[in-house]
Image (cartoon, rainbow, N blue to C red; front, side):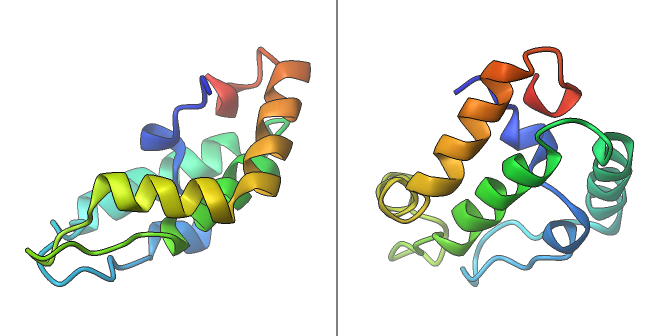
Length: 104
């Protein structure tokens, strides 16, 4: 999709999320601060709202595996099913705004 959700998968509320999986690697206070700084730096970027709507939907779709860690394949499948509208809106916006910092 071209959107750097690893780097920009934040947003104010997003940055304070806790994984639903008990054995997932938890974000450190430094991780959360970096997330918030990235979010603040991009809050006026075109597509900010659309990209974070998708990021939050994706985070809502996390499926935990047997080891208590996120199951990447099952999470991707669930997000693909649940986040069609959000992903489409983010992709359309980023295609229309290819220089938007949130889309890089």
